[in-house]
Length: 152
Image 1 (spheres, one colour):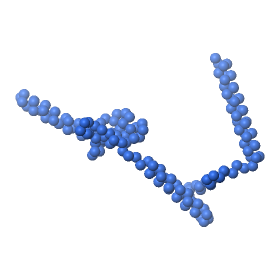
Image 2 (cartoon, rainbow, N blue to C red; image 1 turned 90 degrees about the vertical axis):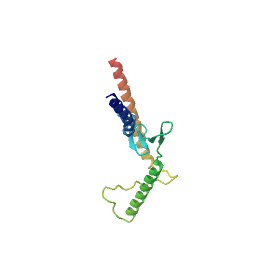
Image 3 (spheres, one colour; image 1 turned 180 degrees about the vertical axis):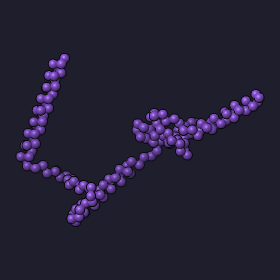
Image 4 (cartoon, rainbow, N blue to C red; image 1 turned 90 degrees about the horizontal axis):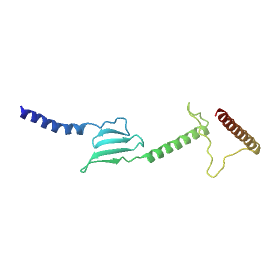
C-alpha cells in the first residue's frame, strides 16, 4: 500500500512539470498578455504595444522584441495616399466625376510658396474679430473671478 502511494506521488511529480510547460500564463488583466507559440510565448505589452517572443534558455527565460516594420507601413500608406490623390486629379482634369462618396483632394501649396491670404480688408476684418473674441474671453474670466470671490 505504501509502495502504491509512493508510486502515485512520484508519477504526480513527473506529470506536474510537463503540464506546467503546456499551460499558458494567467493574463489576469495585467500589463502583459501572453500567447503560446511554438518558440515559447508571445508577450504583448498593453502599455507600449511592444511585442516580444519569450523562450526558455539555458540560464532561464529571455524575451526578445519582435522587429516592427512600422516605417514600411507608414511609407506604404503615404504612397497609396499620393497615388489616390493623383488618380483623383486625373479624373477631375479629364472632366470625369469622382466615384460616389469620394471627396476631391484639397489644393496643395507648392514648396516655398505662401498660401493666398486675400486683401488687407479681409485681414483687417479678421483682426477685429480676433480682438473681439479676446476681449470677450478676458471679460468672462473677470466675471468668473468675481463670482468666485463673492462665493467665498
